[in-house]
Length: 329
Image (cartoon, rainbow, N blue to C red; front, side, top):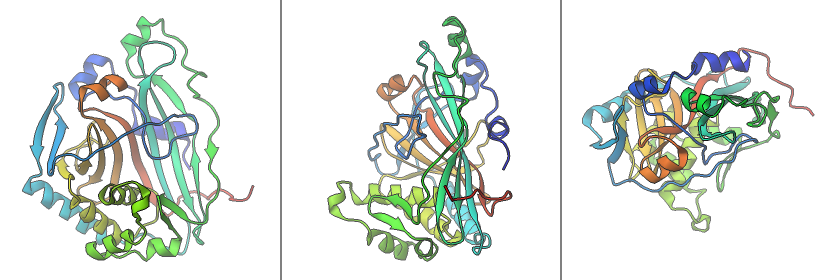
């Protein structure tokens, strides 16, 4: 596997000066509701957006409302068809998912933002045993001017950067949502038709989970896309299933990284909007990210309204190109 810092430098270039950031996109800040790096505290809330309406950032401005368009619907269908046409790689061997987790937040060294990032690799062996491995964390100022105004304090080691990577315990199943704990065979056996997939997933849902059915389906679908060797056909069905949930909208051109906008995104929730960003030509998952939709959340996170404050950027999924680690202690 390539070194963590090389990966991070390639997918997240140095943050430009604040004036340049404003011209390119709103600045970002934060943490997320999924499962955090051991050194990060994550707190997030999400509710449902008005059906088929979504707040979308306009660069350098506040927000405006747009509706799902026919073009966005067609873009998702094209992406889904492309993904369904490509089966997952050889399922007799190892499988891996590689991404970079990126968080923006207030520094404990002063009143300025920092960006923390680290690689996150999910390893799955041929029997379905799986283990998640975090690379060493790096921290840099997200606002150079404010950092200098604070006296250019050293950011390490207070933010936990430079520490060695962390391995999570090896698991025999994929723990994807409350009540949804699947074996490798069950993941690979999930239906490729939307209604059949919906029924199969809802067989694991129970009212005592204290979460509504649609919100549970969204979370389960996101994790199946992000954290399991789900087949190409099932991934396409998940795109269609999540798009059909009440409160979900489709938006074209959402950034997965600065300048990378050849995308179609499924978006849902307020005042924190969750975005599942898909490469529109290949149908591959590009990123999962959270965006602040109102002034209160934006102020809490020190970001502009309409800006993402947490991003999981995917850069590899399938058969590993490097030898897998030993699962033994």
